[in-house]
Image 1: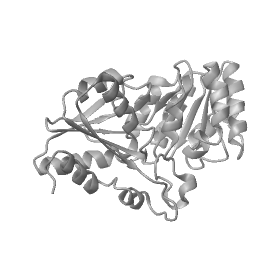
Image 2: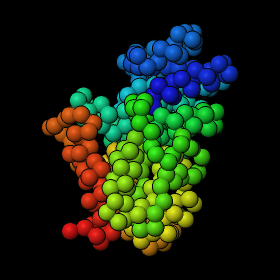
Image 3: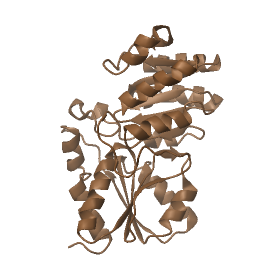
Length: 308
């Protein structure tokens, strides 16, 4: 996902000299296409993420469109006050790029798990929050939002191979992207973990439960109208996210259900507790938190009244 993002950023920089790239002494073997093409438009700000956001704020005020790149926990959490008091309050076009949503930096441990970033980012009015499901959608999302007014947070995965069946790189602002249709059950997914949601839906279809699956890539502002229409068609919905249950996709959907008075039972599948004291691969961590396809399918069957 990050490779497609950087390759697309190079294309945009070719067209618009305002595009700049900043990093916090990170991104080696990922940022080189931009650095080699535009060495004068790349700034390595060192391991100083707060200062990097401050620099980006000044550059945006001067008329540039700076992209700030780091691991998601470092780009979203360390400089959060600087993001709030700078680009958010002043409506400046700073683009914060967080790589490795969820457990993608599995063996690095909890300091590198981006499992609350969406919650803190979507709390800020005027901050667009985008979490693509695969690399083609990441490209589409960047092309659709790189020059909008105000700041943006892009939550990117590292996977450059997996594509979500039925998504075909689609991204439309204010819309959900439906990847599969079925009348029995609804699954809503955010980010790269969408691959497990889609695989779970395939297992469920084989067991006689036909699911509609939709990707929610833009979580702030929320695609509330699309969600309300979709949720209104189903008696039960399961949200899937590699993120804490509080404040992420599940919370967003709960808000829509409550505010619209919808009669749809909600099951939120995400991370319940801090995963302290153990670590492992992304696959292992997802499985440990019940976010693998088998666990998701089992939970959906129970919610639909077809489980044991």
